[in-house]
Length: 197
Image 1: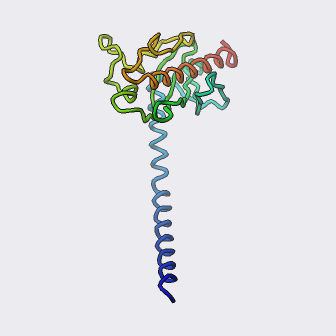
Image 2 (image 1 turned 45 degrees about the vertical axis):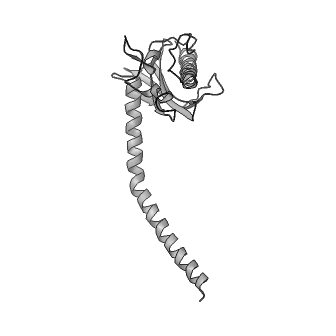
Image 3 (image 1 turned 135 degrees about the horizontal axis):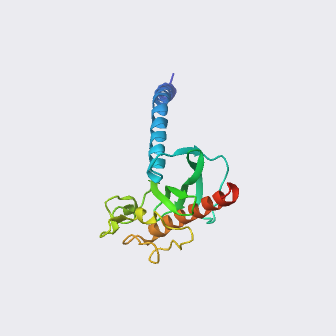
C-alpha cells in the first residue's frame, strides 16, 4: 500500500471519529441550548409586557406595512382570557446587520415595550440602543428603547422629530424606529379588525 492510500485511510478514520464525536456533543447540548433559548424568549416576553399575562403563540400571519421589516413569531397577550395586546418578533435592517427585537403593542394602539434580541451595531454608537445605562434623556432617565413605551402608532416614529436619536447612530435609530412602527401598525390593525375591538 502506498503512502497516499494509507494517508487517505487514516484521514477517513479520523474524520469519521471526529464526526461521531461532534454528533454526540450536539445530541447532548441541543436540548440544553433549546431550553436556554425558550427561557430567554419568555424573559423577553415578560420584559416587553411585564405583569400577570399569558402569552400564546399566534398561528396566523401579520403583513408588515414596511417591505424592509419582516416579522417572525407573534404572540397574543392575554389577561383573564381577554386579548390585551400582541408581541411581534421583528427583524429590521441595521447599520451593520439585521436587528431582531420584540415589540409589545397594546390593544389601544400604543407601544408597551421594546427589547432587542440580536444586534451587531457599532459599540459605543448603535449598540447603545440596547444599553440600559445609556439615556437619551438623562434628566428623566429615559433609555433609547424606553422612549417608545406609550407612543401611539399614529406617531411618525422619525428620529430627530418625535424619536430622540442615538448620538452618531442615525441609521440604527431609524432602523429600530421603523421596526417598532411596522409592528405597532400591523398588530393594532389585526386587533381592531380581525379580533374585534
